[in-house]
Amino acid sequence: MTKTLLKVSNLAKSFGGATALRDISFDVAAGEVVCIIGPSGCGKSTLLRCINHLTAPDSGFVEVAGSYIGRERKADGKLRMQSHREIDRMRPKMGFVFQQFNLWPHLSVLENIVKGPIKVQKRPRAEAEEQALALLQRFGLRDKAHMFPSSLSGGQKQRVAIARALAMGPELMLFDEPTSALDPEIVKEVLLFLRELADSGMTMVIVTHEIGFARHVADRVVFLDRGYVAEAGPSNDVLSNPTNPRLREFLSQITSDQPAAGKGSSPAAEQPIH
Image (cartoon, rainbow, N blue to C red; front, side, top):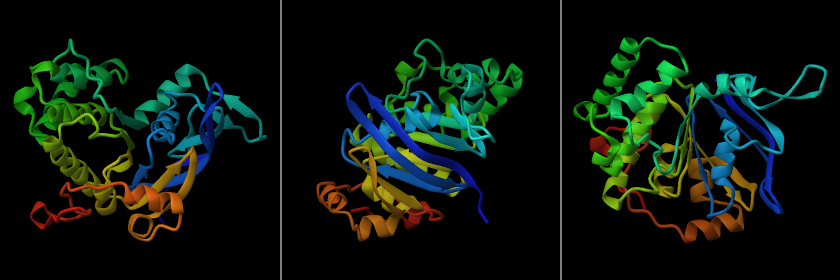
């Protein structure tokens, strides 16, 4: 039986008088791809930030590979808040790729990738650089190693951001709208690369507005609405036969014409997404 890698239980978060998340619960199995969809302002990005504890939830729990991050319930049932050091030790298990890439502009591509392994994981520079160059080779960016982010295209910046996250050896990758800051002609490039990651067995939680991509690549889809999980299940069921009227309305307003393919497919087998 496939183990549960991510467990989110009763997560809630408010900002002042505005409630962003309400009693959110779902699991992600190792090797699974889960896409989170929903209208703007429904809490998708806040959910990712609470999973990684970049934003502290008000209540609820997050477990990664069987270990709590941030808030934990002890064997005696008592609640305990972890220290910043404990949280920082857990974060490398999760790679986080932001909407706006968040690359360090004053560092080269290579330095962006090796900084975490060297500073956080205390790995030797030679080892970190060897891994970084291998990742850049894999992503078709080996010749960009000594360039600065300002000289890269949006798609190249996004691939560097993904390489930087993977360099930490995460068990889980979190993506927050990975194509939202890209020009339309570059979106396909990044979506195809994410599909390749899915094919490699990487466990991923992806906040996305690309419904066609979610249909073909995700194992499951979670639809958030007004801070709630309004519907969740296998991607084809949720997106082809939604039972929630809000989801039906949301899907009717979304169109996508980006090509992609299902997990395990080859580029030659890609079909248009509608």
